[in-house]
Amino acid sequence: MIKPVLRAVIFDLDGVLTDTAHYHYLAWKRLADSLGIAFDEAANEHLKGIDRMGSLNLILGERAKQYSDAEKLALADDKNRHYQQLIAGITPADLLPGALDALHSVQAAGLKIGLASVSKNAKAVVERLGIMALFDDIVDAATIAKGKPDPEIFLAAAAHMQVVPTECLGVEDAIAGVRAIKAAGMTVLGIGDPAVLREADRVIAGLHQFDLVDYLY
Ligand code: G6P
Ligand code: MG
Image (tube, rainbow, N blue to C red; front, side):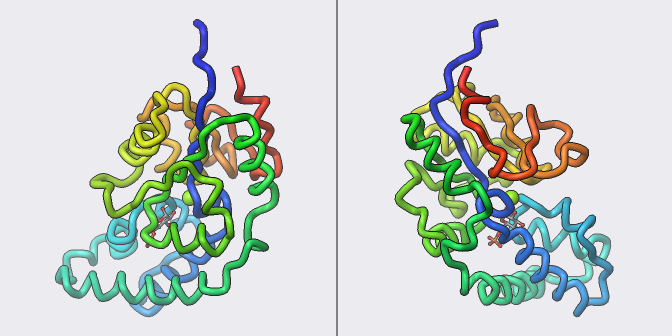
């Protein structure tokens, strides 16, 4: 089979370009503790890539039924306020090792660069990281009906950049994100633990191990 050429790389943000995945964890952990709900890093793994209300429902579990929609919104707002305090101090120094080099290598190769994060705070984080100008497209999470693992957000990024999905590489640290990229028909690069991201085509520990040559067919 002849593989298509690579024309675009679509990055997730939290946990791929910067360590905001940890800030999301800290903010959810404080909320879970205040509600007396057990929550740890292992439980958090299943929240990665899942939108705000979806994450809250997973944390509440069986108890989700005890809360009205308005109460759940208040809890989610509370988490978000805390999260926004945690990300307020982000600077370009918070880019993960290798992230800037990876973005520059993709740009230098003449490929498009997209961002597919379901976070409503993504643009603010990208702005603070000082990398806004590197992206050809940043999908606005507010325009996405279905979160990861649905492929919608990755397909939207490809469509905006006028690239067919099979010519895209998606980069993700979340199980839900890996599934979304797969479902979009793109090649998947997982960032993290190969035992967790089993469904990815390839897994590296971080973007410091990223070499675009590995994906240029
Ligand atoms: C990303 C993170 C999730 C987070 C989601 C929504 O996908 O991986 O942990 O819940 O964004 O973020 P938001 O900033 O909109 O609450
Ligand atoms: Mg992520």
